[in-house]
Length: 66
Image (cartoon, rainbow, N blue to C red; front, side, top):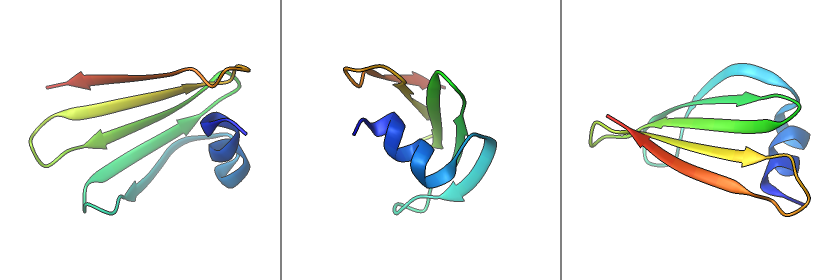
């Protein structure tokens, strides 16, 4: 099971599901037919964006914004 499939199974399709991770950082999760995107507002001021693609090989990306 890919990371995308795990997220879809747990949360279903959603836009803007908010929460706090184990490090106390705010996160926003969005899941659609093609991708699951998690934006983490890190304590160091950066926003880490993890994108999990709905494909057979479990492709993922990690980007940063400031």
